[in-house]
Image: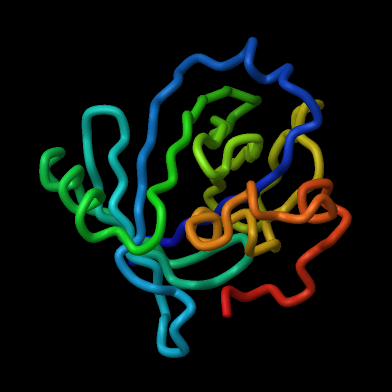
Length: 176
């Protein structure tokens, strides 16, 4: 079983852009409704540049979650997004920035989530120490609204001004 271990941060400024060494367009959609009482996972299809993947993640908030990912043909991924996605397809540009021993992934969201920029860094264990760059701001790892699966049902444009400023923190760390 694969386990994803990552931390998420908002950004203080756009100083990271000068350090980015790669930019890729992403489109992803979810194939199940995570707000059903019986939901234990999210199932998504992602088109990343010229490849596509099917991904299954456990619905857990925090540093680590179960994750399974399988490559699928690009044409099938595009067709699945168009015909089977539940809710809007999330679009974003992902930038890669090397900081110390880690590569940070910075997602600049488009469409209904335009204006939101989130940085993620994957780790090999929950105890691993990471170098946090000066452009990284508030950590939002434990806030469900910053997860892509939540953004598909409650996009950034629909957030209140308190939610957008980070003043209104999620008190219940779950998707339900």
